[in-house]
Structures are given as C-alpha cells and as structure tokens.
Length: 291
Ligand code: MF3
Ligand code: CO
Image 1 (cartoon, rainbow, N blue to C red):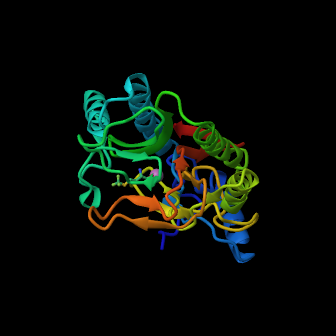
Image 2 (image 1 turned 135 degrees about the vertical axis):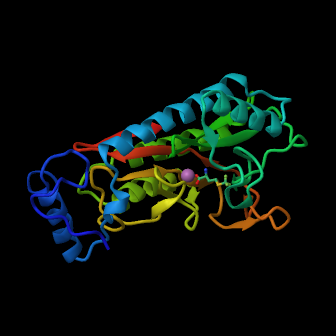
C-alpha cells in the first residue's frame, strides 16, 4: 500500500534523516506486533511532527471556541445562539467549523441536551433552561488540519444526579487518557473508560464512538469504549484520535431522530453525557491537542 522506502532514502516522517537511522526500526516493531495478530496503524494514520503542529494549532482554536461558549452559556439563550458564537469565534480565528455542511449537517456545532446522546442540531426554538445539561461539540478546520472536542455544561443549578453523570463522564475521559501511551492498545483505554462508567452504575454507548482525526474529520480507527485490554489498534507515537465516550444514566440503547436524520436519543429517556478530547500519542505518553 505504501511506497517502499530505501534504507538510504529520507525518512517518511519528514525529519530529513536517512530512513535506516530514523523510522526503520519503528516500522519493523509495528510489523512484528502485527505478526502477533494485532491491529496496527497504517502509515497514513501516523502523523509527522509537522502534521501534529498543524493539528495543535487547529486544536488551540477549537479549545478557544469552547472557552468562549463556556463564558457565555446561560439559561434563556437558544442553542442557535451557541451556534452563532461558534461560527463567529471560529471565523475570527481564520478557521472553518468542520460540522457545517459535513454530510449535509446544517449547523456549525452540535448541541445535545439531557436525553440527547449526540448530534443535537442548534435551533432558535430550543431554549436552555435551568437544570439542563448540555454537550457542546466543536470541530475546527484550520490550514487543512482538523481538531474535535466537546464539553458538558450545567445550566444553573442541576440535580445531583445530573451533576454526578457529568462529573463521572469527565472522569471516564481522564481514566482513558491515563492508558494512552506508545505500544499499548486502544482497548486498554476503552476498558478504563468503560470500567469507570460501570462502577458508577452507568452504561456506555457501544456503536457510536471516537475516531482518528487530523488530516480528515473522521479517520480510522473507530474508537470504542466497550473493549478489553490488549485489543483494538496498537497505539504508536503520532497516532491522533478522539476520546469521546457517551455515558448514559440508564440503558445504552438509543434511537435516531427520523425527522432530522442526525440526533441520537437514549431509548429510555434518561440522561446522557459526553466529554471529548483530541489526543496525540507521544514518545512517552500523550498530548492533548484539543479539549
Ligand atoms: N463532532 C462529532 C464527532 O465527535 C461529529 C459531528 S458530525 C456533525 O465526531 F456533522 F454532526 F457535526
Ligand atoms: Co469526534
């Protein structure tokens, strides 16, 4: 699939160093692990340092957009008002909201309230009320690089049950991050997320998950949280993906809104929460590129 590099050719990573002195041993290590029966990343999923720099810049804007939402979100505003903030702050930074027109998606951001699991569509008719919990999911394209992160916001005073769901879901991402290191497996990360959700009596949506990101909005691998250790894709330095578990207070079952073709709801009408980061695997652990 990839052009065979001569040992004396410049390395594919852009270092300018001969392949034999740069990533040759790295590529061979991956091949050995693949021979043991594991899923390994193809080279197109492994970002060069220059690509990581680009995704980091995109991610700074993505994070700043969410900071702007955090500063302004309040009861009485509409989810369209959130869309307007995202559109303006993104444009002012010289960037593009990745969701807009993505597979026909009509807005610049996803806003998912209470029993909406994800892909809630902003509307001037949806007004935030005291006690709501809402996920705001922002994705940015800057100089061709994609980043993606989301946060939960509690609108005014929320019930202790909702507050706990929001907090535990945030902790799930933190538990997952602790497992992100080179030569581990994505299944280690997902297992840690799932374990923490289950320990708190929650479920995790199985068929909707995270993804590789950076050169495209959605790249391989699919990132599941219903996994066991030592399974799923091998993590290597330069792999960039999202951790974005959808944690439900009740059942993990869901249905999709047929009228808009986008929004997912919990089947039982109980609440759902989600936090998302874009993370890069580094030589000794991870770097969060958007949060
Ligand atoms: N940001 C979402 C994700 O985490 C994707 C939203 S796609 C959209 O993958 F088009 F609905 F915005
Ligand atoms: Co995502």
